[in-house]
Length: 481
Image (cartoon, rainbow, N blue to C red):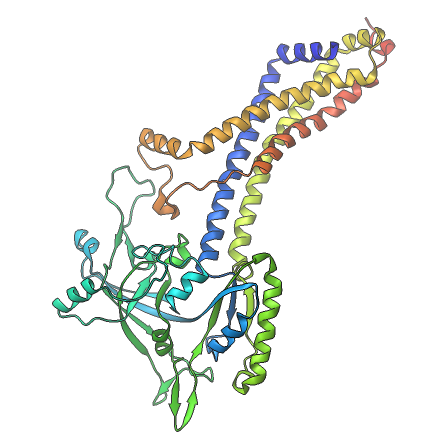
């Protein structure tokens, strides 16, 4: 009982105790908030990357490979593979002429610009079953079978304006968006600085260099051939990953083959079959990805054995989306780790502060320790007084920090809106961060570990002072009294 009484008295009698509690409170609270924000950010990024690709990506070089439908049939023989679809990836340029209600309203109609882009030829309905393609579409959002078809109303409008109806395309939202120059701090209520340059039905012209099956660029009279085709905008793609949305444009699979020189050709009786460049694969169980990769590699080797034309293709790669995007994922993980380390230092400082306070208490209370021991208190009992003090101080601070951090995270959007109103500018400009909300994800085990670690660290830091107090004998403690 005496241990609890003395621990309570020490907690009440020192203002430094309050300082240590506040330090622990700030350390735990900051770390809880940071972990939740970083976890949410990492989750959003991983979902966007995986949703824009597939569980497994089978990819050749820019030359591509034929017999892709036969290859897909063999791939689907693996019971762990749910769906697979071919795709063509081309590097090219897109010519944009601003034509749409947003462009007219902002006075930029008719503006022309060219941008580098990544052209993907896909089968949209199949792609929607492989990844989150349909979820990322604006006009056909979550459509079970999205398409590149130009709607009858848009087709009629184009014909009325004397324009030819072209095959449909779906550009990345950022690819066809113009951002006005703006201040680093954007006042609330300022005009929107993002202008969608093209409306539904607007024409985009794609340009690329076609590649022969030998790997050489197609040429005419010794000059590289340039393929150029016009497409009509039918939808917009927004994955919330800037790298995808600012470069990708999707067109029909057969159109991409023709644009990139990968369609079926016949020259002097020699037939060159149509080619694809990659295959997107969705798994039933991602934990068995390694087994499926081995199965796909085995299927490729068997296909090569049956088709001599495939035997010179040695650069086929089969990898998960995590391996393909390892660079961006590793950067995010490093940032999260650094934030945890930096904010963890606050908890470490709080722990050392509690240890230093205990060292002072032991020095000042040497006489009291001597009296306790002369009355029969054991060394362990004396040590537990100071260990209890450290645990109580850090425990109260950790609990307060944990609660405050969780409350802050739960109300972070409302807090951000209030701060923006008070300060007069957007604290979290969503267009700058390319997010429509402040991401957060609270991991209960991770959060609990932060609070427990703060207490354990404080107890460890105070163990030296507790050990010194336990070693004192009544004779030494009362020698000069």
